[in-house]
Length: 395
Ligand code: PMP
Image (cartoon, rainbow, N blue to C red; front, side, top):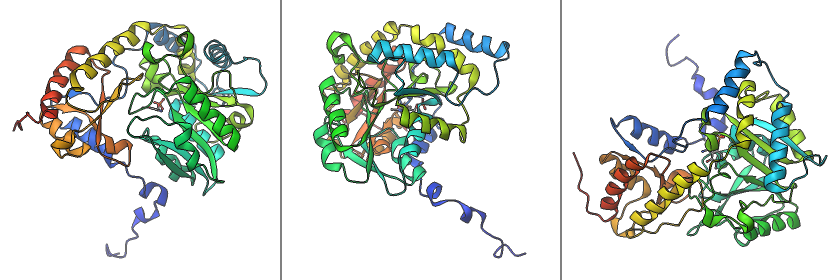
């Protein structure tokens, strides 16, 4: 058979996957791989190791042969630990039959299951712009349409900005605070207003709180609480993770909690997709819910302050209330897109992620400060020179 008659097998690929553009993220990885000794400020995970108690709990589970499937909703002791945790931090009743918990394969697993459970083809969901990279893909993955809510320049996804985007096809609003890539933390009244809007319009509110443990003291609410639309409101679907919080992103552990009518369907979908979250690692994360991250949080606050101090003389940079990211604007006088600025920084061994990876605009750059402080200092020095337009290309 001549090669021209050979069927082109990649014609078999679905539109869903062909239309998915992964070039932005791939570019960040490629740039990283091309450098020998990079100052890597592009990484979206904590720089500290997994706490010993978690490692031991996971290793014990493996050694004790707790390696088989679990129930699709997760092992009972972790379910109980999550319910007790939500009672402590959000005031939920752990015995309320109207609320349910599902342990998922990472926060990403929970995001996908929630979108699959809520969206029919043509249905809409509202996401922030800038967004976390998975959010827009939930559209092609489910047949739904993700509608971006422009939150520039302050990155606050307020009820006022969301309200005009709600249509009769809107099924859910997805809010992310602290946010990736901006680190923005909405305050309790902004989040309460968003919840009230969703309730009044008959739309489900989903809150991605993967960075809930990384809220700096200046962004905490009354009584030192982490602002959440789900505070005393179990009708909101809360999605949280263990990976970012405890440095175990590769364990793929997260959970969703909220209205039983929704979580029960997510569990059904999990049964036919992921089956369950990795069982030994479900045991592994149980001790995490008792751990304090005060020292790590203080370390990130110090780094946040340092980044703001160093970069704010040169550019517009919103003060992140949480997570470990800063999203700064490429100064207009440089005449560069986010991507062009990132390429320039690479010439000086500094790795960042262009804002266009997270947004319809490519005017900003994401810097992760989840790195040892000397590395951050080295990176900041280069960035200050670049932002001032003073750095020359190092060939
Ligand atoms: N949501 C946000 C806002 C994130 O930043 C990330 C990870 N970068 C995720 C969800 C996915 O996390 P996981 O690794 O738990 O799937």
